[in-house]
Image (cartoon, rainbow, N blue to C red; front, side, top):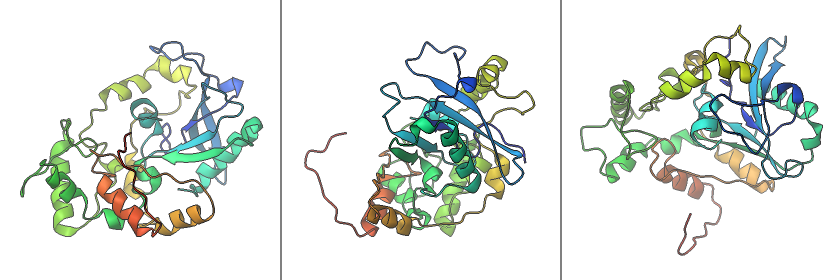
Length: 289
């Protein structure tokens, strides 16, 4: 199985292994924190290589929480989140193996608070595919972005232009979902709709950047999403309600966030999901972000 950088989503962490220390990134200024890039061998025969990118806290890495970032897709690279965004409670087996390997290599972080974070399908389809079935069309219609016959809206920012050749395919997918109540195909099988990926694709495939990040020359070119993973991925859970409930009841801290101009993980979906959990809902007056 051939993996591109980060395509199985174990990417944004906080580490300190000098052999993988990234001294500098081409074109980037001097940074007030350490970062590490490398691979862990996982799987039954250890022939699968998962890339990690560990970014140490700029504050106090000895005591600050450690965060595991799971990006969406499924099958998309966490480098997109690391460079373009911000950076489930049970991860896939090989992701788990890589995480265990990480803490074995950096035992000084084992006692730190640990948070699992992510976005989009990193939270398993925004926690509930079923509740999200009927929110995309009303969400965009209520914002005046589509009429009774048209679509083609940027799903990640309804006020931004829909760039690239995927605008038309996104319009067709909206109609398909409206007619059939069928979920969108994995974004990994289409690429990222309405987003221009030219800049990150060019940067991460530069030889000097690959060398700085310790990417073996034997590996192929980087892409934002893996068509192979996106096409053959088998969805196991359509609703994460019971697991979120169990996490809260077990005393774990849980935060769910949804973008106010994002249709993929919309505020309407978030409100429906949160209310469906059955926990008391408190409202804050004069709330500001």
